Amino acid sequence: MFSQIFILSPRGDTIINRDFRSDLPKSTPETFFRQAKTYSGDANPLFAVDCIQFAHIKRGGLYIVGTSRFNLQPAMSLELLDRLAKEIKDFCGVINEEVLRKNFILIYEILDESFDFGYPQLMATEQIKPLIVNDPIQPQPDSVMNSLRPKIQTFNIFVPNTIGSQAVQRSVLNKNQANEIFVDIYEKLNVLFNSSAYVINQSIEGCIQMTSFLQGNPPLKLALNDDLQIGRQQGQYSAGVILDDCNFHECVNANELDMNKTLRIQPPDGQFVVMNYRISGDYSAPFRLFPIIEEISSSKIEVTIKLKACFDAKILASYANVRIPIPKQTANAYPELLKNAQQETAEYDSNKKIVEWQIKKLQGGQERSLKIKLTLQATQTAHTARKEIGPIAMNFEIPMFNVSRLQIKYLRIEERGNTTNPHRWVRYITQSSSYVCRI
Image: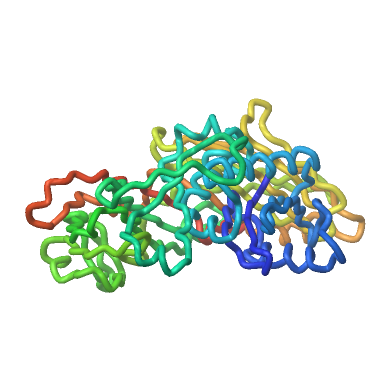
């Protein structure tokens, strides 16, 4: 279905951008807006640019857009975008640029509950309401009189869409706000394999990100692994976690990191990156790709690709996307999956000469296989064409898993006399940055 859903302002500014599959250029929203502005009136609800399919609706002057590299079903695409707009309106009361910017965390939460890897899952407000954590925020009036009134923060609660453009509101004093903090450990992997699935080069780019909704922004103490070490010496090997280098947010005091493996943090409101880090050297790559090429005849080639998930069976990759470039002189390509394949698709793009293999979910320890039968044009032989196959590129995301083994031991409030016990949410996410296998 959708590869990406984004919302643009009337000026073309990106307000929301949820990329489900990472298979489109980062400039896709700009491409859409440029094309939409070429129409004398409103743009057609569906059109294509550079082999990217766009479906869109307008609500409150904003463009709500779904994209895909494959043909979209017109009626279904527009219906799904309309239902998404209704969900946003049910939670926020009205759809306009100011409301969406103030509620961007809530909008991303709605998108993640409504779509899974771009496929519709729960498309009714009543279905996702129990799953939504964040409360909508009503924008404050701009009048001078309101700015002089006592600071009372206003939130929306859900009401059915039939109420109209105004959401029912409840005023909540600051002391009754949600008292919680979210900690995310993101790691992006750079891995290069040879044709035998041996690692040639690898590195990790990671960060610890916090989103704070703590009352009064009290000081925090964050503890990491006891075996953590900063700086790698030449030829050094250690069973612990070694960070080649790292840097910190200005609100972080890292004086105790070397001795006690702790960071002291004076958190600002909202989201910030506590620490960025980089790791090189050996680590266990989560996926292995095994390509096999056979010359069936002078004009036919058979490519078999085996994919193995090299992590614990309790872990589930939320998606995996494998792209295989094939020779430019290919007449036809026929990708074939195993007969018992589930939640997998394989398609050939004849314009770009690429076979795309998509796996919706992949459990640790499992193996998947794809066979591609190539028929070449008369101007090229199989022996020369096989050199044009590859390299294979892979995109994926694995929730609640990290390769580096960097861990949060604990997160404490350091403020004396503080008797509150806020909710602490810790999440680990591993993604591909450049995950390539040569053939």
